[in-house]
Image (cartoon, rainbow, N blue to C red; front, side, top):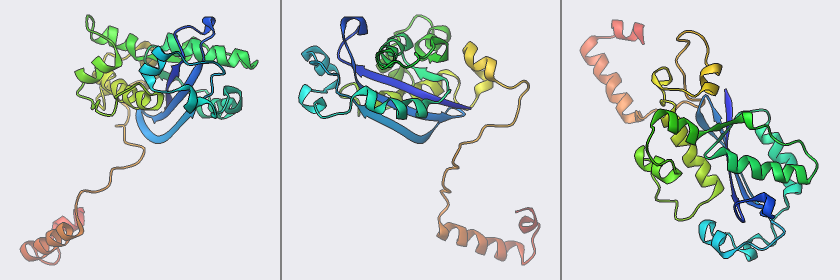
Length: 229
């Protein structure tokens, strides 16, 4: 199953007040694991970035002045997300901003039902706590050292880790999954999930050679071990 973790940084809180997106981050998940396929777009918002917003994300008017307009990256953005569900921390905020940009260039808005909101999952699974991305990362011992300021791509990477923790990690069957995930789950136990790309072996060539020499010495030339292996 393919999902896209999605985040934005903006000039303010309300597109209705003329605020715009200044950064988009996208991280691809397959079976809930990041594949390494990511996108990051810095955007010229065609307006001044208030100093209060600059303090949050660190993106200045000077930095954004030569960046692309949303209209210039819209096709690439839409092609990357495809029809995948969008995993978002505080989905209402990001959906309203991306839809404002899409409507501005006469494109179809993204329906809200495509969003999987990690805040809503957290509220169901761990009620009564604080649900900011920082607080959830701390709860799950996710490294925050790189997050001196907000950044759309970095926040996507952190949200992907929080999402995996919230849905139970690799033990999906034991998690309190949200309705969107539970509905997509196959009936019955199904096959065990695997990483899209296997992890490299931690066995060195020297260790493998020593092991082979041990087997030959202790078990002879034709041990049952070799037949099993």
